Length: 95
Length: 204
Figure 1 (cartoon, rainbow over the protein chains, first blue to last red):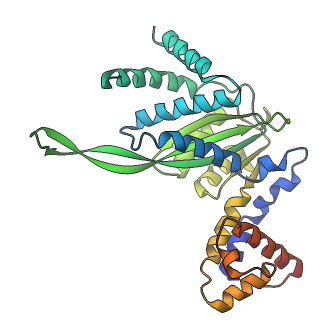
Figure 2: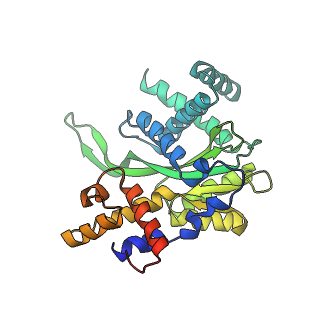
Figure 3: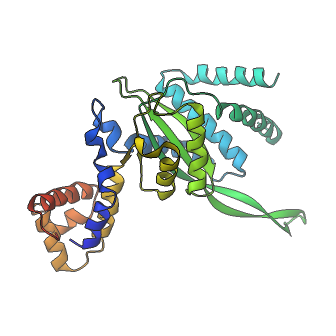
C-alpha cells in the first residue's frame, strides 16, 4: 500500500481512538459523525426542493423550519403541534 | 402564497431566529457532533442588464454556502438527539466555526454543565476553534469514517497491477477490485491496517 494512505491514517490517530478512553458511553454515538450525516441527508432532501436560495435570510429561515421539524420528529411531537407552537411564538413576538 | 406574504413570513421568522440562537440550553448533551452541508445560493451583483421586456435587472451569480450544524446526543440510553444550533457561512473556516462554537458556549454547553466529548471531521478551522474555546480538557474524537475514507482515497491512486495485487493480498486475499471499489472499501482498509499494526512492518 502507498505510504500516503498510511500517513493519512496516522494523522490525528490519537484523536481517532479517543473514544476507547470514554467510560460508560455508547461507542456507536462517539466513534463517528454518522448520526449527523444522517441528519444532514434529511435536511438536504428537503432543502434540495428549493433548488437555489435567493438570500442568506431565506436560507436561515428554511434551515430553521427544517431543524424545528426534525427536532419535533425526534421528540415524537407531531408537525401539527410544532408548527402551531411556532405560529403562536410568532404571534407573541410580533403582536 | 404570494411573494409578498412569503417575504412577510421570512421577516417574522427572522426576528424569532435571533431569539432562538440566544436561548440558553438547559439540558446539555454529553456528546456534540459537528459537521457542515453545502447549499447553492443566488446572489445579486451590482451590474445591470436589460431583459426581453427591456426591464433593468441585476445580474445574478450562483455561489455555494455552507450550513454548519451542531447535533447534541444524550448517552443515557434514551437515544435522544437535538440540533442545538447552526450557522450559515460562506466557507468552513475558523471564523465561521468560532461564531457557532462561541454561541454554544455562551448558551451553556460547557464541560461544567455536562458536556463530555465532541465528534468532528478533519476540518482544521473547527479543531483550532475547539482548542481555543474549550481548551485541552475537552475530549475531541475524530470521526473514524472520515479518517478511513481519506485513507481509502489514497488507495485509489494505486493503478499498476502489481500494487493492486499487493493490496489484495494485504486485505485478506480479496481481489483488488473488491478492495478499491464499492462501499466496503473502508472495511478492507481497516482490516489491512489492523494486519499492518499486528505485524509492525514499515510499509504495507
